Image (tube, rainbow, N blue to C red):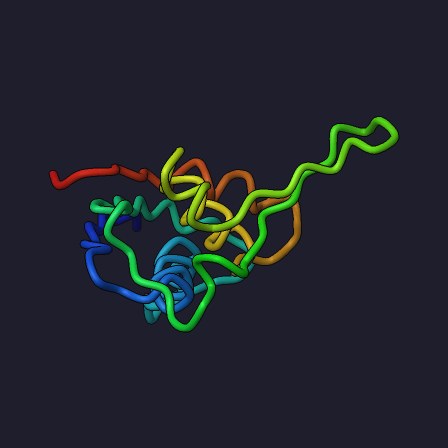
Length: 118
């Protein structure tokens, strides 16, 4: 049975928020949890621009991507990624908390991220 959840990300620590969202997306909070079935739960996270991080992660945590060409490694600090699009930070954190299998893309489609409030 699919359910809809709404989570306010304001002043929540990024990793704790991501693990909470990953559990809801998989349906592990349901007593009828079946790892072979997709839960169909939809999770809406709003105020992604107001998430908190601990320590010096704003300057030290780096997001990397590679174009596939020689010397094509791009690096950006968390603070810069937050300025551009805070939804990317939450999306990558939640994606990292989900199992790396063919169901991950289906779970990620049920994640809705909103910069401001609802």
